[in-house]
Image (tube, rainbow, N blue to C red; front, side, top):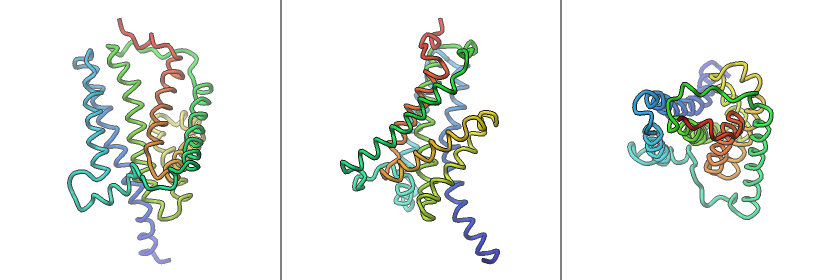
Length: 242
């Protein structure tokens, strides 16, 4: 293989990886910016959560083929794979496999809650209102679940599946783990193996079902459960600002 062929082959891998990372950034950054503004401007009203929810609806609709440019509609819908109604995976046996994969992710979440919970609840005094705290818990989990599945198990993995489903799932999972390095390398070393295993299961779930919707659901519920039971210790009173 000469240099040109190597570059061409590398580009085939790079395009879906970069497109997935771009989608993840576009989907997550607005929430981060808006919730910080909301903490300073009218924190008694969860306007950042409402604005982010509206943005997510429009963003996912566009990724699924709505809007301009029309020439990209089919490609966007294919790469996102939001839903594939004709898939064999929605037979009785297929549904059983889908539910089994979802249960495995639920078990991993339970292990994370039991092992990764802090010794004491976090200090939340810097957050000015109940609306802000509830927004962070609920909308934070929703943004992660929706955007990460669309970016990684949708656009990135789908684009890499031309090289084989196993290769696509492993590469996507490696990138998914590395992206979590933004939370700190210590956390990455501690939770990295678990994140990789979870990503592999998410990838299998998307490939088997032909849809990222089951992954979005368990991802949202898993992040929400970990934040509430793991980080907050299941104490809803920590979210009440008097």
